[in-house]
Image (cartoon, rainbow, N blue to C red):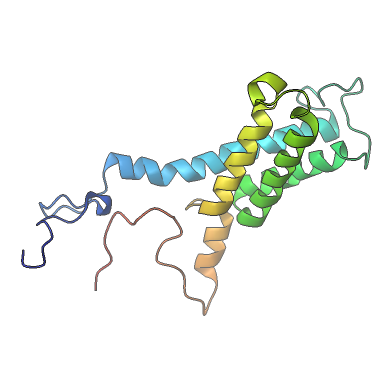
Length: 177
């Protein structure tokens, strides 16, 4: 080619130079991975909140009653954030703001509850708090992905232009001009 590029388009577009524009298995997995991570992490986070607020699923850890007292700082508020924020993230509704709040609550939990005991999460029992913090920060940065209420609402809003892709990943099929 005269433009100095190779004869095939980059593989990230799913074009192998043979005229096929089918996405690769890796690209399909990459598109499904973010929504799957968001749904699973949000659901599990909401389960922690439900356990603490309602005493279900084994109840609140370290509580004889299995329930956190109403409005008790910070436990009840953390459980409320876990339940509501986790459900919002799992559904993909207000995903970025909800994920930021969830991430911040886990950063607070790590530094106020766990970090005083020892430096590393493996030593202080803060692995779950650290992982949730970083997972929710990733979700806030990348967005909800394709299988989300936010994405469906954005598609249905009349008079607004929808971005070419709601995924931070490159499109597997190049747009036609």
